[in-house]
Image (cartoon, rainbow, N blue to C red; front, side):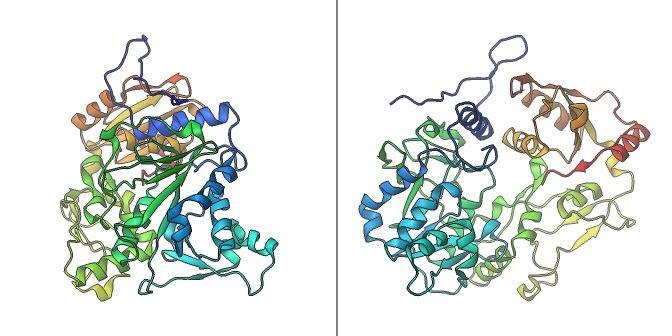
Length: 432
């Protein structure tokens, strides 16, 4: 069966083909747009920025009952996404141990769903829903003896050779890596996903990284696909992925919002594992504010240096819950040298979160995103002119919802009065 959606190179405003690679963001957008246009999803809508609850999801879920790996599995981890409700129900009906990740990992790794003793069929069905996960679950501690035989994840897109793309937040990949670190899964653990047939397409291999989770089986409303994927699954938490200074991105805020990450970091450090983060770099005061979400006090030095151990304030993991130590050395005028990029003709339907994903996918994340959606424009601040020009080149010919985005260096470079007045009128957003 030919993929319903085919990936094609982009075109610029003159209609000529661009020499640019398809990104994960491009693929997500094509899938979401196609499913909305063809009415292929149920509630919740729209499907953008979600794991789509596709029509026929229960038919796809029920196919798992015939998989040998499912029949033999005793402990099953299933994501909380709506289209996987049928898998959660099947696991509960078969009296398997059902584990579900906590939303955004903010209160631990996962919960065990425990229906009331002698629960009727209707209560079992409720337990498989999002509300049931809240009402009938108990947390699983990190030191619990858990061995998961089967992992079921949602997907936005997947290829028949097992390469998967999620909604762009990385939680499924991180959850799997954490389970590896816990010793809860091994090379025999099977990974399954369910999708609509239109979500099957050819994903370029170069988009896959070593932290990306691959799948062994794909279930759709019409078929069961064995991928025979030879690519390795994540082998644990890759700590060096958390600091991405070269593109202006730092996942420090993500670490702060997921306390369990701190526990994993300290435990693996004590075990002597490699917990080195991405190479540290000097960053200016405003950039640090973006990472921490707080206003930093001014001090009389030349730069702000962020330590590569974000959980360690005194050299001991006993301080894991403390904030990162920052030694301010930036001059007050350090950020006056930033170079701004103008983005115009932004479609009214585009949300700031969508633009952030587009910038990340093109590896042009700015120091700061100045969103002016009502005026259909945005300004991107970069550390210097070279970085800004590289971003303009990368975004050339960008098309969003049928609109060609105008991307160029802003005309008012260095006009601090103009910029400060503009910033006072808009909701300034940090790209985190």
